[in-house]
Amino acid sequence: MCGISGEIRFDGRPASVEAVAAMSRCLAARGPDGDGLWASGPVALGHRRLAVIDLSARGAQPMVDSELGLTVVFNGCIYNYPELRTELEAKGYRFFSTSDTEVLLKAYHHWGERFVDHLVGMFALCIVERDTNRVVLARDRLGIKPLYLAEMAGAVRFASTLPALVAAGDVDSTIDPVALHHYLTFHSVVPAPRTIVRGVTKLPPATVLTIEADGRRRQVEYWRADEEAAGVADAGPKSAGEWREAVGAALRLAVRRRLVSDVPVGVLLSGGLDSSLIVALLSEQGQEHLSTFSIGFESAGGEQGDEFRWSDAVASRYGTDHHQIRVPTPDVLSAVPATVAAMSEPMVSHDVVAFYLLSQEVARHVKVVQSGQGADEVFAGYHWYQSLASAESDDVDRYASVFFDRTHDDVRDVVNPEHFADEDVSRSFVAEHFGRPGVTSAVRRALRLDTHVMLVEDPVKRVDNTTMAWGLEARVPFLDHELVELAAACPAELLLAQGGKGILKDLARDVLPADLIDRPKGYFPVPPLVHLSGASVELLREALLSPAAADRGLFRTAHVRHLLDHPDELTTLRYNKLWELGLLELWLQTNDIG
Image (cartoon, rainbow, N blue to C red):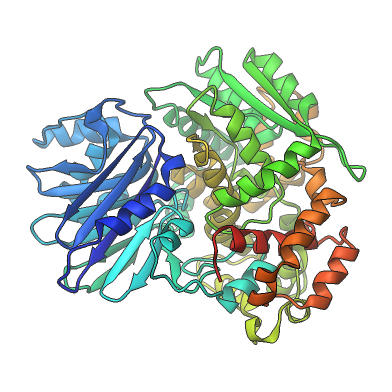
């Protein structure tokens, strides 16, 4: 787990080490254990290291293999690297480290650009060929690790965060109206390749981008869950019992894979089904004295601010070394600026502050944690899947009615004309995605969209940004790609049973209390950021009515003042409308953008 950056030139000039160093400085929090720079003619690379596998200097990056003529920078973890190493050694490759990073170099040399097919893990990486100056950028199948790109005259830069690219200069930092529409409509989800900034894009998940020395490019999507699921469905389980057994085996393998580490691994234990199931399966596999961590807040607006009752019960049942973190409301508000500064892109989910504060505490105890993120999107845990299962109206309209924060006309009322996308680009995006071949039901279309887009651009990004802000590596077993393929093939009725995640609930009955499994679905509650009042409203007022906001002119003044006077207006998914606008403005000001 690290921060990576680089510049690739194809105009005959040497790459700017200064620009890469500037980006690397912005990524320091992601890699507190070391840093390195490497340059060779048209390419320069930067790396910030969080040492988890091969803690010695031999595992440092940028890693150069002089024998093979390859150099790499890499962010993430390859869970099957021991198996790959054994396979490559049998083919005659010699290793100088015990790191997963070196395995990437040998794998690329042996299999070429399809080496990604052999990787199990999370990764964003750049490999440079010495003899051709060819550069290969790649991102993992579910987009767990980020990779941002900026085009400029004669060059491309990349980094683990958007602000790092902005900090290096020469980036068009004006606001993209299409991305702004997505942000306000699609619950702050801005699908790749766009970002809120015109001059920065992101490499889509499951993508390999090859850049030749003269600037020619080739981009390939190498994996899609629904395409892989077709083969699973043909050759896989048939009965409900067989599906339960197959999913259970795949989840156990996913959890076991994510124990690969040269440092201890803990668990973020919310007290919900998903994280509780991880703890249970780790205990089943012999993990003792496991460190677990839960966070809670003061209640507000009639909403409970913690789920300690449930997390405490799981911790007690499995004898974990449990840490219960209570955060008073003033501490929540004081953490907002630092949380905003940790965001690669603006994110409106209230629990982003919770994850930031939780990660701060967890990083004092461990460097690696497993998290339950992704189970709801993969195994149909959200309420809108139930709605779509019985939908008789248009699939797209139904999805928009249960998920979108605003209609197109609502956005028109929020945004000044010069920043307004005239077409309903968010609905069109969903319609295009729903219209792709491969799945036939509304539920399957929504699951595919949420797995490949919403999950990547909201929950996964949220966990990556907040954990890496404290040099903490988060691993997500529910996003093991083989488990995701299995879920994509699993009969929808098994996923939707018992109010959602039915097959996971069946698995959990052998290891967790029934009242935890059958209780109404909980969310990571941060009531002070849902029910805004007092100091929180003043924080947003200062940002939205500042000279910088006036100069930028994104939002209609009358609408801003209306929300400041009515700070409890919520979206369909119970997110605060004032928070959404204020968070974006805070993020833009923090990064001097737009």
